[in-house]
Image: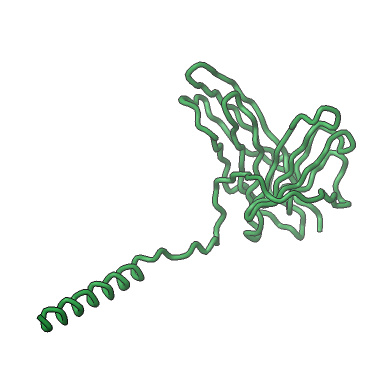
Length: 206
């Protein structure tokens, strides 16, 4: 009886140690975040005061290292800055009605590679028009466009004629300003929508 008890205890100990070793071996490698996650949910974030860099004009709104051009004068709108763990976001609302006009965001950090996006409302959700650019912050220039992408939230049952591209406003790179344009046909069960949207960005002078 005593011998059987000792064998049972030893067997339980071996199983316990084996489980520990397996768990340690299967532990995932932490995400080093060396590259940009090319999907940019905007999240609620921490609200703070929007501070306008002195180099910007009345139609340019600062994100982080980048600015976006808007069709309104800043005196006619309300700018609200939100910061999440990974993104700096600016909501632009009408001063008189409080209507949300635009939402822009930029990924924080990541050296000279920057992800920027604009959220566009749809009849069933929203889409994010985003691009990744490589910048020269000292010269205040965009060296090249790395990627353009449309992210759906949620994705419609059918997407037709999806086109998104970015061009240099000067026709060459490096460029002071780059514009992204998207043409989309979205179709849900009982709804359809054509979207033709875009925005223009530049690098904030240091």
